[in-house]
Image 1 (cartoon, each protein chain N blue to C red):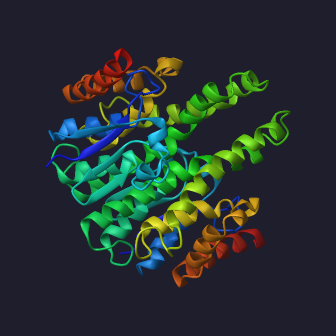
Image 2: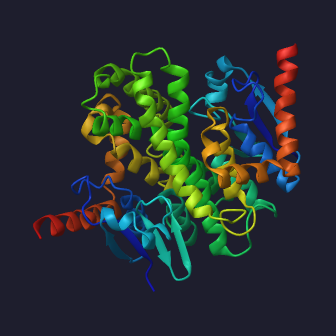
Length: 216
Length: 216
């Protein structure tokens, strides 16, 4: 039986693959696991049935038989642990890949989300312009450090892993800002990941959802 | 051989156990694993030797033989996987515990850190007071959802696990704000965790570092 994930019925990113189901779709494509998608509206996400699965009213969730999970980082690691293709074999290297998944969602992502949320929620506030340099600098600090660590390597630690997958998903949220243009090595890193056939399949699938809904 | 972690030589929290080494110390105490601590100053954290271990210039790190890790969530899960005491036996329940570790650091923690950072970095800005309700509401949304999920249970999912450990570490960052006082069940949840002997040992050890340095 295939697992079932949830995704936005009407994604606010208009099919750019920035919603958090993208990481899970991509991981499932990388390991060749088929899956079903249950689309949820915003009201449905805040209703008791969804909150029983995802207490914070978000997507994605992951249901596989008796197992119910949320948090894209946890789901990606779970998929990677149970199928070959997204984690190295050595236990130490697997622990380091988990380190990079956490680094993506808990160290690199927060200033990126904060920057994006300010643009969405505080654009009309009198302080918006004055705060922009603070928000940008917080993102750039992380990008500087990440670019320094990546160096001239293709991936963060050996072969492509679940850690790279999660980091690229997080970096892609910067897309429209153009901020990555100042970091050629990170831009190439993201492009290298986006060129993977599994990324393309996942991207096309989430875009098809957006198109079907917006044309309906 | 015991693992070695890094911690602040002069913790900005003045020994209140809010620095990120606390989660790792606590996890090691829960499983009864002794460890060594290497204290680092702020300049040392930004120097090449530390950046080689922790590319974002933070603490804690975890070194055990050939293994070098960072990210407290990843380290706590690594410790929990390799010793009995912090994860349930059933694979599904272990996956859910990892979900809660991620929920702590990537869903509950960001608005708490944002609230705390504004108080530290933007207190003298003209917009500080006007933004406080926005920042508080973002924290309260997560606390409402977490309290709703916890209900009348002692812990988030069955027995105390690494997921509770990480969530409590995150909630403790709200201490000085008094915001938890509006959530009696979360206050009791944190108190229940703090009463664990392993928490007390970890807390006392980090406090001893702060006292030794500040009296030196």
